[in-house]
Length: 164
Image 1 (cartoon, helix red, strand yellow):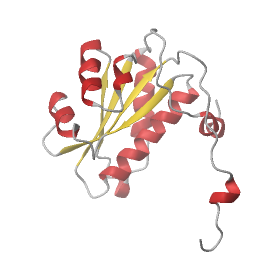
Image 2 (cartoon, one colour; image 1 turned 180 degrees about the vertical axis):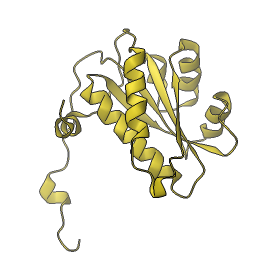
Image 3 (cartoon, one colour; image 1 turned 90 degrees about the horizontal axis):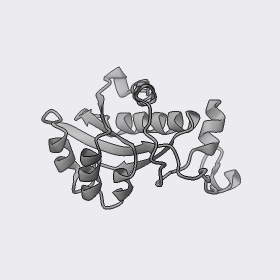
Image 4 (spheres, helix red, strand yellow; image 1 turned 60 degrees about the vertical axis):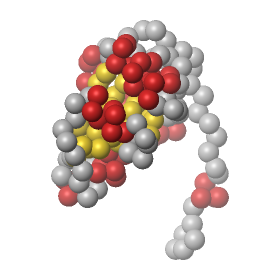
């Protein structure tokens, strides 16, 4: 799928088929995440791929808006060293992964991390180095049903030339 089509078709998927995601595809998703831009090219972002059902269940229990992580065949946890632009760098990586998942025919949904009460617990559970920050958890799998992108605000409502 071409990148512009992936952007148009990307939507959050919260219900997944039981089919496992191939290791090669998970590696490809992380590879696309690591290729995201990074402020000053610091590249502080790291990725933990959780495919073990008990690990995903534990993560789902912490995430108030991410219970579906337990149902997903995989969860990619995006973490970052605590640098000046850690959140921007991490979010760029997350978006690359979400778009790559769409392009590969996978469904994905990101769950917030940094400002959530469970952030420290997730970092500790995954044995992240001291000082690392949770950016997001991304549930990944084959969609249980065809994804239906939601309508976005019309372009003429959000586009401003020169000033607001």
